[in-house]
Length: 609
Ligand code: F6R
Image 1: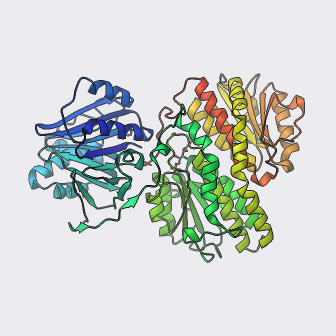
Image 2: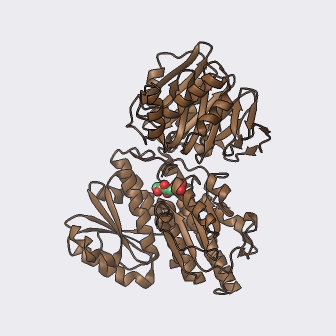
Image 3: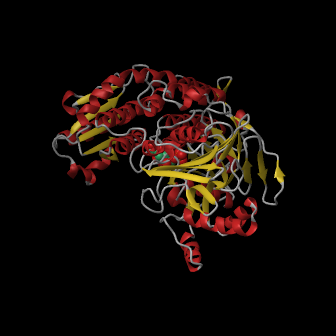
């Protein structure tokens, strides 16, 4: 949800900023812009649309500068347009913003009453205008920043230039991510690690309330009392290749292929002597014992992983679990006590609604456990305990490998919780762990059917609507499969419990409407087959995804995609089974000519409510 980058050092800033923005474009791509600090003042250029439009504008020449800030926007206040693009400038100040100023109407009115004129419809312009006012008054950037932020209600990550201080960048954040990349003779700020990787792997997580001042040679962090902080320098172990396409046409396709390795890296450190063990996460048995119920809170794909988690925990540990949509959670006054465990799931660790849900759970005294991919993200830092997934950077907006590793963690948790609750004996747990360790290989084998999936996609790509059906664990998968298809191919799609279709939605099934049925659960197979026969009888086009040896009557399906024969246990089928659904969506979108990695209207990290 908007990407920010800033550079100060010895290189040509324009190149560093454009490269950084390219690596952050997954965070929003409604417009892009840069400001460069020069001895003559600040030069700003911006353009609606993709980064390519900005590049085009800059191709006629830019002033020499080795210090600047850049922004790629996901529009919230004000339509995507040149004028609403960042950076926003006022007087001596230029800044880029990720977040939302909730009281911007009030601030705007106050400024207009003082005679200020607004050029854009954005909330951000109120920040830059106030900042310029205070800078004129105090002549001190940090004091001006603090005075301005005291007026603001909302969320922000800001990178700021002052015209009379070329070579200096100021940065500050609240509830939106921002890191400081510490290089050799050059320093950066960025919303996320991929933007700094070409220059440095060392970075500082900027604490809320701290203000960072960067020059080419120095990074100073001032705490709210104005004292210099000595921040911890972290090291990103991602290699740069992990954040690049590496010969693939799209990040999404690469990330689908990365799933076996991501699963392996997430599962194996938590298996010690054949048993699940969360020692590396500093989670002991006491933390995982003696609670009344579990609430899993997340958004989108992460929530779908949570639905699988619910099935697994309830089935194995017999503990009641509910799955809650994070954006609803704090508004429905959840019944939540200290005896409850709240599991927060988030790839980015920055999703605003999910973060707010975590804060509510903490305020109510519940135990909180986060399953997060991005190290040091807000959710990871604020939760009582965190289990990091090791998916590596997920760049494609549509989540794939992050989903798989989240589900992987739920298997680990369910097995451990079941053992601690006395529901599974040690031998059964060990057997389950062995089955779990075979999953990366099952997923690898499933990737071999990519060509079949591409072919199957060509049969559904021209549909205006599609339906996904399944029962039990398969129903959880339908939600994720359906979301993947609609978000990247724009084919309208819905997911249903297979038995639910006939309670209304079946009226939408007419000749050729694709229905993708997931049928990996033997105990529910006959029922699912009956449901797809109901669809066939109404002219629907049925594509079944099932295990290698599942008998699907010829007249019940138009096409069958089979998982490899190594997938035998129903409980462990969801991870291989999600692969054909991801591939189906991917190939449908490619065949339709869609922008797979950057679907319209979306952004990777949703840091606004
Ligand atoms: C869909 C997708 C989103 C995210 C959701 C939560 O492909 O990626 O639905 O899953 O926005 O994001 P995180 O996991 O970062 O909290």
